[in-house]
Length: 443
Image (cartoon, rainbow, N blue to C red; front, side):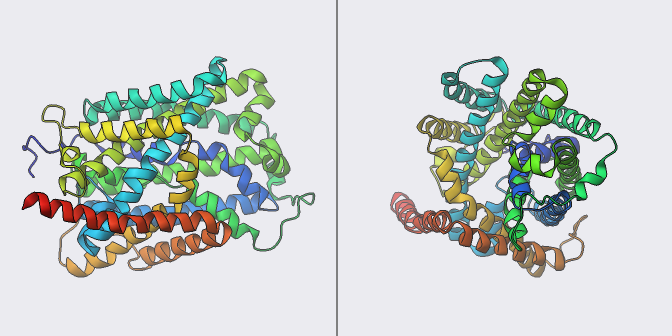
C-alpha cells in the first residue's frame, strides 16, 4: 500500500513522539512497586542497583535489535510482521493470538484498574468507583485514538511529560532525604539474610518492568523517515527509561534504606510521605495515575495496529483490518480491543490471564529478535542507515538470556508457565479452523 492509499496509515510521528511512546510504553506502574520485590530478594542496595543496570543493558540490547527490524520493515504490526516473513503465518498467528487477543487487552484492563485505584485515592472516592472509572478511561482512550495517530500522540506526549514530572519529583525528594549518606546503599541488611542465587529470581521482575519497548514497532507504519527515526527514538527513549529506573531506585534506597524498601508495599508513596506527609502520598497517587493512564493509551494504540494487521492478512475478521479513510485510524480494531479490555476489567479475570501469557510475551520477544538472523542472511545486501552494533553478539545474548528467564519462570511458577504454553497451543487448531473457513469462503 502507498502513502496515498485511503486504506493506509499516514507517517506523522517524529523522533520525540517515538521516544515518548517508548518511555510511556515501558514506564507504567511497575517502577512504583517492583523495586520492593527486588529488594526482598537481595541483601543490600548494591545488588539492587546492579540488577536494574543489568536489566537495562539487556533491554537496551533488545531495543537496538528492534531498531534494525523496524528500519527493515517500517510498517504496522511489529513482531507479527517479522515472524510472518521469517517463520511463516502459523508462528505469526500464534503470537497475535496470544498478544493482541489476550495480553494487550489484559494488560490494559490491569493497568486501567491500577489507574482508577490511584485516581480514587487521590480524589478521596470510595472503592466502588474503581471499575466504572477504569471502564471510562478505556472508553475515553479508544475515543481519542479514533481521530488518528496525531490525537493519540498528543495525549501520549502529555501523559509522558506528567509521568516524568512525577518521577523527577520522586527522585529529588528521595535524594534530599539522603543528607549525604549515599554510602548506606552498600550496607548489608543482616536482618533479612538472602540465600545464594536468589538474585537470579530478582532479575525476573526487573526484566518485566522493562517490558513494553515494542509498542513503537507496532506503530512503525506511522513514523516519518522510519529508517532513521525508529533507531533514534528507540535508543533515546530506552536510555531515558534506564536512567529514570536507576535514579528512582537510588531515591528509594537512600530514602527508605534497603530494609525499608524490602518491607514497603508502596515505596514511592512512603518516600513522599517522609517529607510531605499525607499530602505527599496524594501527590504520588496523582503521578502514578498519570503514568498508568499514559501506558493504557500506548498499549491500546499499539495493540489495535497488530489486530488491524492480522485482519488485513485475513488472520482475523476482515472488518478489523480496515483503516478509516478520513482519520487513518484502525477504528474497528480499536473498538474490538477496547470492548474486550472492558469485559476483562468488569470480570476481574485479567490478573490471571496476564500471568498465563507472560511466558508467551517473552517468547514472542525472543523469536522476534531471532528473525534478525534470517533478515541478515536473506537481505545481506539491503542498504540501511542503521544496523545493530556488535552483531551477532547482541541479538544472541538477548535471545539466550530471555530464554533463560523463561526457563527460570517455568521453574518458579510451573502452573502459570504451563497455562501460557497451553494458550499458545490452543491457537494451532484455531489457526487451522480459520484457514479452513477462509478457503471455504473464497470457494
